[in-house]
Length: 81
Image (cartoon, rainbow, N blue to C red):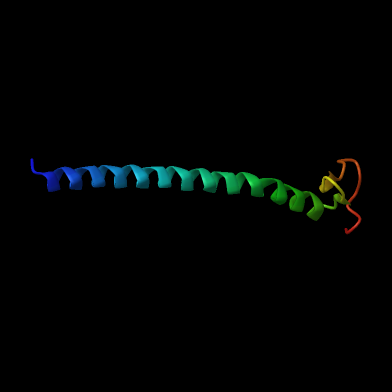
């Protein structure tokens, strides 16, 4: 083998590994985004059924947002009907 063939093979191997790593990272990122979106969908579903949403934002040294969702209990009627 001459030197140019060795260089081409090495560059090809590095490129293939780079694309494989990129594919794994993109798949992980997609799953991460889906997992982040699930709680928001659940909150929207509970509030749509008549649940209660309480929002408390605390500023200061440690900025914190507290969200409390209270679902409608099975024994109560929906006030919209």
